[in-house]
Image 1: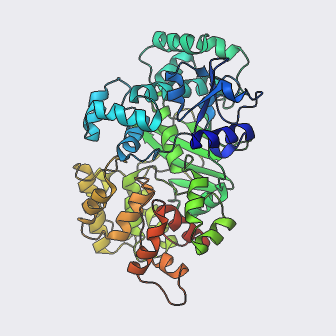
Image 2: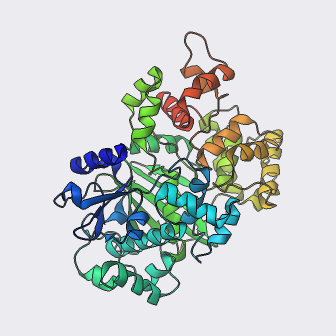
Image 3: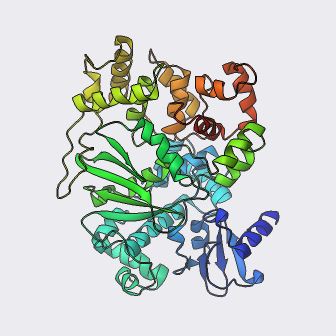
Length: 489
């Protein structure tokens, strides 16, 4: 009941901090809305609250065409208190239930399908299949509203098995076909109606895009990544097809604009989900700020830079190589060597029917290429070169992977079994590639320096202080690094 009272206050205030955290079912209309819906607020006795859009859908409500639930920020990957739910959401986001096999999903998570259904019901108010269905529906609706993609392409991108099933789902949910929805004028002004494709990415506020860009600016691998003004770009490869991802602030507040060039429709959903994780768009910023703000030093830093985020990684192997290069040398030095490795061993970028910026001309090399690389005359010491080759072979052979669903502690121990990779590197990779919100590189010299009072801390002392920052230690690390500008990682 207390939670419902909080939701009711947030609904009446149209508090954007709660956007995507819960949904409002309106009993008199049969629709469900975001808490920021601009329509006249219904009476309290006529509403019900749901922890997810899937839960509202399972209760018989249909999505509002005015506030467009598909445009809300996503459910945080650590929603609820269940690690299994968190990992399940990650797998569903990557298409694990596209074929509707919940038994296989449960097997990958190490639980029974019955237990998995019970956990999802407890934490999200809906079954795993309902979550997957709502996710596909919302993504398809967004593409209908914001792009000029043919309906057959949208059906493929959203994971529907056939156009017929796609059309039937929309008739059942909205009472209209997808084409009718596009013609109806219910959607916002479309974007991306050109040779490339653009979609909007909603983000939880506050969100400091400039701080995110500053982080990537110092670490952008030459030839592979570029930060130009307020725009971030990088090269990508999906199923052997090359492309470019471009992200920048959207004209609408609370959104980023994601533009894709050369990427196939089938890879669209995965690219969008990956971008959400790379830029940490679904982090519950208010909750993190309240928890970390109990520490006086962090409170001052968060006041100067609210909405701290942990930048993710487009590719776990690439990030780990970059982290190895950053051991005991400056960020600038590591970035320079990363560019040399990309130039020598990376595949040249080739995009059909699109022009790439001159600064982007390489894909980051694959594990197969670096497993055999000599790394001569690029400024890399022999021991570090051997560490990268060993890592590349381990990834190539499947002994190391970067699936976010794995136990982060077990991942770190596995990574540290490679000679030349210590706890700092393992925690840094878990923090960014696995998106573990509690990963913490306690031995980082910059972190030890920034909290020196009056003498520099030891890693053990820093770990002890960081106990009160759980489960958001990765965000604390980012706040501390940001206070030193380009320090760390």
